[in-house]
Image 1 (cartoon, helix red, strand yellow):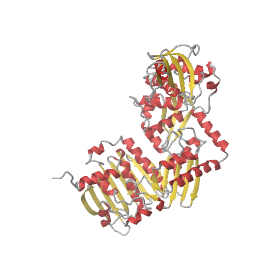
Image 2 (cartoon, one colour):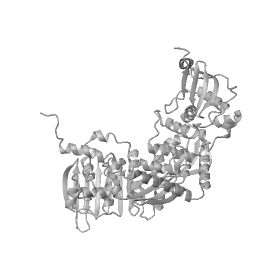
Image 3 (cartoon, helix red, strand yellow):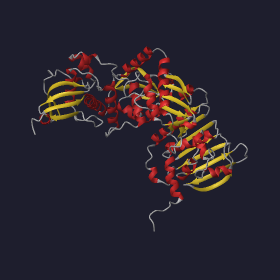
Length: 586
């Protein structure tokens, strides 16, 4: 008997379902897109346990007849295309005929649907891809699709699902993207029977963006538009002050289809040249109306990846449109001034601090001083003193900086190169951990309460972590459905902007970047703050007293040789290495 065999249809369906159904959010996307293709004016989404136990999507669209309903759960049955040539001009969201059969193959699936011309509706019950029941039922016009017990028959897939809150976060992102692209549709999203989104129909993108992301976000958006012969671009871009540490605030739509387009993201970034600091990313909601013959949407079953012909010209259009929008929003000086004020408020050095240029002990020491590190900085002597770091490194002479990023110092055995950012990050991390680790971290009350008005996704993240943040010494609580009020911060962070800190915390959690190989959430937060808010950065010019102070503090650390993320703080070289290079020794 040969080794190759044809798989049974049931197994093949489960395998192919994995291409379309990656997680609960994939199901929400497919069902809502079907509802949009059916001309719905109102769509309601209910989920429980992050979509693992229940996803229900109800719409008031055109509905299906009994015959069409039964065909809809068969693979490659679709109403969107008839022949291969139709793929060249696809305008609908769905067209493969894979979504419903893929969903039904890995869940307990129920479908109810009725057309306007029918007196009764049709109900189908499918379990694990097998049709269990088909009957006539009472139903309103439109379709109700209900998915229960996702991956009940594929436990290997189910165990890879994340926490309920994480899965719901992906669902929320999906609904937000679909709502941004379909302004005339009324969207309602509920989780555990609690309403999270209620987006009324509108014809103004700015109105919907305000309802989703909040007033603070919307007030900092600039409308843009541009065109070339076969493509148009329109939407909103954020002022530089709205930039964040990740691309989560960027949304791209091609012919109303939400896509992941890294090339367009890079073009957007290029349009902000001269407006943003390094490693800051702008917010944007951009729509591209492109001749379908220049777009290939048949790249991947999820239809989120597309190919564009003449991509270089479209990227150039993005860059020029964004740059023009920023310029036309007002005089460049106010924009730059506003950005500078935001940076100053957040605690990031706008330019080289005087303390790092004047090379005076008092000023440079103050730059490195923090609430918990005052005692670490004293009279250290000249730059030719002895500073011990760990058991194996004794610095005898500080030689200076290289490229304003690395510190070169002589040791008893040779020399060391020290990454000034990684070194100071370790110092700040251990100081922060000392404050966080106490049983009752002291708090510093704010003179004026700070109110955070954040996008729904980030508010959900902060809700989830509110108890933990309060344990660290914050005093924060929900203020309505979309805001957070902060009354106190940990004493060690008394000089930091609490709004900026919590926004960055939400950014990191949102993108899943808060991973430091550390054993505690406290460690993750300390590493984030040490890296983003407090530490000396690469390209900061340090004077000798500041270098001395930094190395003295590093020498007092429990682990002076690695930053919290695992990168080395220094590289050691033995004198014999130099001698070998100069052929003094063999």
